Image (cartoon, rainbow, N blue to C red; front, side, top):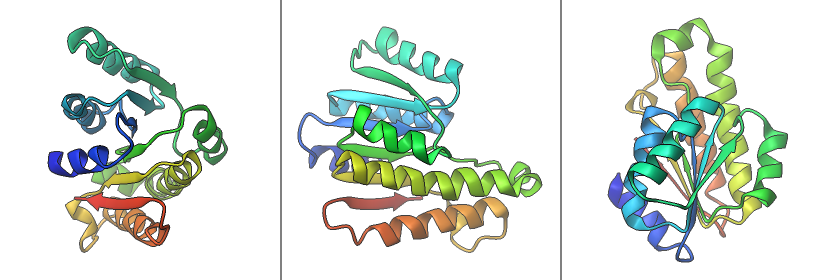
Length: 177
């Protein structure tokens, strides 16, 4: 996966501004840490949790000496907000890690899985287009291969959205499992 990130960021206009959705989560936070050696100009840390975004920003700034963090409090489910962010916080590369990932919880709350994993992905794809990004990387899951759960099915739908968007000639897309 690190090679995919390196390829995505190195072929963008250097130095790149990179948005990481779900930056306050365990996967999004780790992606932020892995992006630091690639020396992005800015890391836009998008998430809906105030505390988690504050903590990853503080860790990257104070613990790793990276001053290019920009916290962005927003919810990927909110299409209007994401469209607004495209002009306020444009990115060269979008790394989409925001998702509901816990299989049993998504079985109990399927509407949340659809809203975050499917609608949220569509909104982030639109954000990437509107902000003029050159690359879009979505994190998926092996559970999307032959889905047997709500979570797997919604991540498969998200992959199909990204695949469909790939016809956009100005923006290169990839989904990684």
